Amino acid sequence: MPVWNFVRRNVYQDSVTLMRLTHDMEAVAGVRRAAAMMGTPPNRALLGQAGLLDADGETAGPADLVIAVVADSAAGAEAARAAAEAALAAPRAASRPGAPRPRTLAGALRALPDATLALISVPGAYAGAEARRALDAGLHVMLFSDNVPLETEIELKRMARERDLFVMGPDCGTAILAGVPMGFANAVPRGRIGLVAASGTGLQEVSCRLVAEGEGVSHALGVGGRDLSDAVGGTMTLAALALLADDPATDVVVVIGKTPGPGVAAALTDALQRLGKPAVSYFATVVAGDARPAWGVGGLFEKGVTPHARSAGHLHAAATLEDAAMAAVALARGEVPRAVEFSMPAAEIERLVAAQAAALAPGQRFVRGVYSGGTLAWEAVALLSARLPDLAPGVRGEGAGHRVVDLGDDIFTVGRPHPMIDGAVRRERIAREAADPSTAVLLLDVVLGYGAHADPAGALVPALQAARRLAAGAGRGLATVASVTGTERDPQVRSIQAAALRRAGVLVLDSNAQAARLAALIAARAGVPRP
Image (cartoon, rainbow, N blue to C red):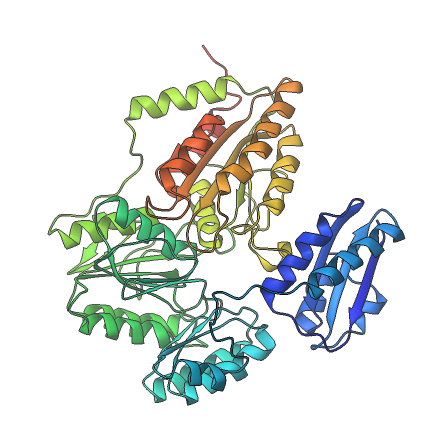
């Protein structure tokens, strides 16, 4: 399919505008794929990997807008370009009449002189400069931007500690500060449990499970996915633990992230032991040949040991995000933490597994995870790998057997909205997996919250119904298993979303961990002769 690039010189646009351009272009008849991105070297590389870059796009600079189109004809590509130009020319609505719209940090501080935090969402190449200005102005920083160079992150966090400030991120999509949700956070009441996390869907899953158990969050601090690496040194994680240790509103602390680097592990273990409050950890890692989570840090817990069977003083390690939340609840109430496998009785699980497996045709064997949340996708990989052979490593959706894809990864969202915002990428992948005669189970996450799609279940249900019709037309069944990360106070309302999915024949479990386990049980039963 031919590709056309149109380059507009020195026309900077923010990420929200770029997503709108992409949406408008993909609505044009004959357009197969489109993207609008600034011409930074990393963005050009992403366009190239996605098959959306031509010679004209290669000439773009960081301040240039690249409009990329895959279309059936040159006329279709030109129509898409015209749609993008029309969207650029359309006036923007103000957030509210008379609201200040500063164009610089200095202007924002003049409008809000009492501000204490700056939320930065600009292309990663420019994010460092804006964050430095904010730190120099005495502001804490929530760095929503991704693709921020590692050396820039290290420098910013060093600057922050020197000024007794905090940098959340980079790629900090979620935080809750003193009850105020930021980014994609959910509607969570204030409570006595504090969270330190990489700031994505793992933080959302734990905070929502806390709410389901009648607890709330004091603060949820996103530190960025690289903070626990030896290169960054756990700078913000350690600072966050110190903050929560001194916070009288926090009784229990939960730490969520990738397994720390060896150099960080000892410092983190020491910080947790000196915390003076009960603490729960969930550290997931995936390495070659071993997709099991590694529990705890610094040798405090043995790998592969059931976490609640081993503890050290007031420290507990969790096998899943749900178990981390449940352990925090138990500790806050003075109870003994217990792991959760399923909320439903074993007999009900057996009935579901038997019924779904019985509907599958010979040759249907594999779980296909289609995720919008990266942490949730990795958790699914860890749980599936414990029960199923032939699981492809990673979350790129590769391999001919069991596979999981994180559609929020940069390679899948080139110039397109994140799947938590717009379900188009996921609908395409659902159709692809349903057309594969070896697919037995579709495994999905549905993530709610501020900034997420207004009706994610409604956006997915037509694709899921089409998938089931496709399978039925070929004489196959198709099991669909999902979890919904959210609360009743979210704009989308968790119970409404879950009910919509169930009406469409989806098996909705209470957590991502439970959904992954059920999917694995169905796939393991597939092809087993029935008595």
